[in-house]
Length: 119
Image (cartoon, rainbow, N blue to C red; front, side):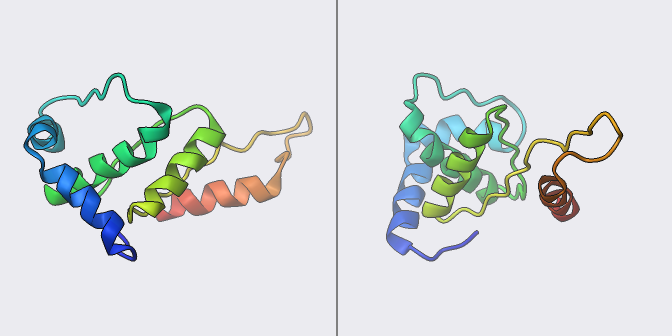
């Protein structure tokens, strides 16, 4: 995790340790329960994702998977998480093959394989 902006990270820490959130995050962070943050506005998704990752890191979980089938949504969430001081990798859609059996977009395939290698 990057801590480049201490004020943004401070807000994240205050929220993670707030009793209302801490209670909801505690059982999820140790794998005992699922976490549902219903009724959250789309504009808050990046903050909530960063919040979840911060809570998981506090409890020793090194990796959190966030799943979205929309590429733009994945990119936006990752960019917003960076603003809150949380590094995020985006796994692009898997490369597609053409009728001839070649990869349709080699550049996208290279990005996909590089992220898989990191994971």
